[in-house]
Length: 219
Image (cartoon, rainbow, N blue to C red):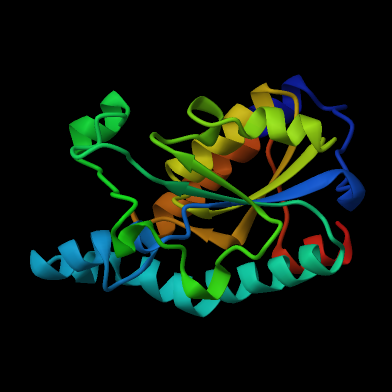
């Protein structure tokens, strides 16, 4: 990080403008964010759930409550709220990306794993995008919808910080959005250290970290 400040010492700060911002919540579904379904259930069945305990505890104790705060704030302001989830179609998920096929990531829309967590599920009028890979910018029409809405800034949060959140933020920055990432409303299955390392890399790539409370206060 220090080398970037030596190269680019006078970069103007980017301020959050809630009137131009959309809240983007990544993959808060039972597939990857619930201890009793999907990956959580698999980890329990193969006896390795303890390795993911920080992740699921962090979701319950910090991430979900903060997402609820953000949702309440954006809903009260009638601001755009975007929900993203993984969904694969076809009997064997034929539309999956090569990466998802290689890792055997499969989410049938007719299973509980496709459902959003009850605590942060979409409400009427909010936008839902179903992706078949890591970033919604590569397999959905999210970019066109955001531009139609006049959105210039994104507030990205959810799971996983090391993968889907990470790539969504990078893609958004490359497409010209001022992009904020919310450390206390995001988490990583790989653990706290990997979560923090991913955030550090995002900041180095021009993402702006803001806490839940800072966003609610307007930056």
